[in-house]
Image (tube, rainbow, N blue to C red):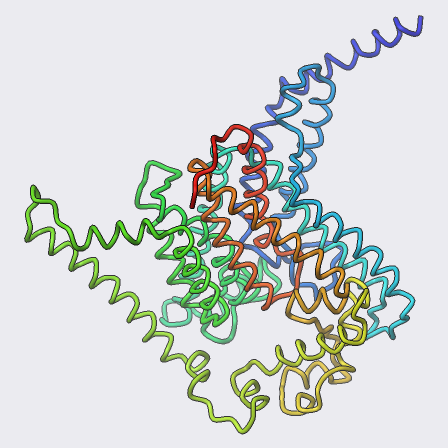
Length: 511
């Protein structure tokens, strides 16, 4: 009787599964939702985001379609587990890579370190208590991790990559357009800054900056520069080096690359420019040598069958265009006080130099984070708690002559400080052991990137991954949030595709 009942119950479940799958194509729906995640990534500080305090500015709009995506993925997982076709189940299974082990160990360790940090009993700061900060920090870490896992799950091969890049480029195109609207309000009388700022406040926690620095859909200009350098430029640069195209329009990637560079210049982000220069240089040296040789050969050798005059003219035009763009960009930046004060300012000391170049506040936070680490070198103070210790470790020279620090120390202020450097934050909150595990995760990612570079079919992933890895490695020196999706997306693409394609690839080729 029990066996008959079991068969009867399974007979009831099967029609429900069939009806559900007949009404909805869950695979297509999940791909559309994933596309919406990528499309909405530029909005970093969405106004309507529950459970986060008003001073938490990392509020990605993309988390909403991401939550729906996880619901669909869960349904697909349930349906796949009910089927007897194991080959289809294996295709849907979350891939496991050895690079994930350090991340898992890091997550387990921060739970331990946070539990231990509670015994330090830090004094609450402006209503912010230890466990409240810890809970918020774990929530933001979970947001970043959710982007990483979803990316890992949604990328099995180059077809998935092409699908993702189409949506990613659409989001970049909208960002370029909106940045152009902001630039028009800054430099022309066609639009007022107040009107554009009012439009921005419809979806963002902040309007456009008072200074003439475009921020796109991001919270501030430096965040937009971070998005361009760590998320978009890696794929555009790789596409340019390999002539890889996701659509039939061969001009799309070069046009988006040009627009991205222009927007990056309009952000006046010194850190963003440094990241792009370093990542571009290292990527070309490691994986673009053949392209450089091919370009020089094209410039210096003209086929006999072609018209020499027109060929030399085309090459001269290309050289002049490159020189003109480079010279124009450098001249434009050199005229901006925010940039040229780096070499024109007169300072009495190193501390005075940092203050006069608008870096005093950041250096103050870094100094304080180092002091916290030296006081708690092994386990740190616990995830999310470094802000409770920063004020008491500020250097004396920063207490009176830095407006940002003075604003923080005002009794009327409700601000909560942060380290502004992910490496120092991890050292301060999780000690040397947590830092070692996180660095191990980054180098595990690098090993997968190098693997992709050795395989011809995965070279697009390898080049973009290398650019991303270098850019993110530097960007971690300038921000301290785990929730920024652009710091997880490309790593997920690399691990997802390398895991699933490595089994079918031929013998690795040399770089």
